[in-house]
Image (cartoon, rainbow, N blue to C red):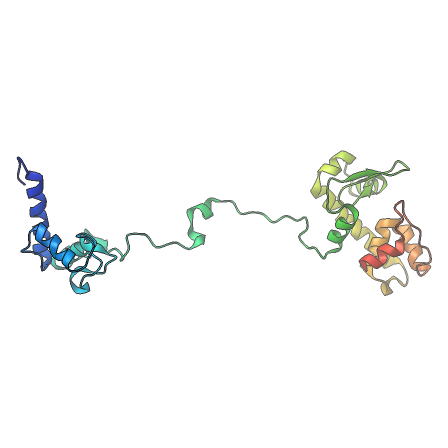
Length: 252
């Protein structure tokens, strides 16, 4: 390397000439200015990234002159597999896009867990939830007679007491209102308990099971039994004017 005034330009020119010599380029006997002029006359738009060039000499346009020269040097200079022991780059310097499953952001992001609420819109539980509270798990109303109906399925305190005794647990109505999983558990127990009573009623197998579940939810297990044994003639209504037969037809 040379020092002194204009040393940078001279060193750069020597490096350019050395690359051209090693690559056996047609420009090896050209000055930089002559090379630029020749490139422009050939219709290209730059020295380091020409648009058009014979592929056997300079590689594809997307590779660019610099990488093409390196490839030439590596191929003829005994540099192994190309770039200091590394595999030759593709025609683009931009890495190939990875499949979404391999994305670092995807792998670090926790999976979204599916909610049990509303998982099966056609199930008896979900239909009952929508019918009783429009799906609002924290719903609570007080009837004219002072009874409180709580949660997505609108359980009264008497039925909650049945559950607590059967399962030997304790909780307040407020705790029940705020614990959605507890509401699910009580509803599962409630349905299983009703099913046992349906199975014990002679002739109940000729009725819709889900219809009878709805009747029992509205009028109690005893009311459901009378409804079946009287062939639907026992048909009282609740505080909102809904008859047992209305719920049977709605859910059957």
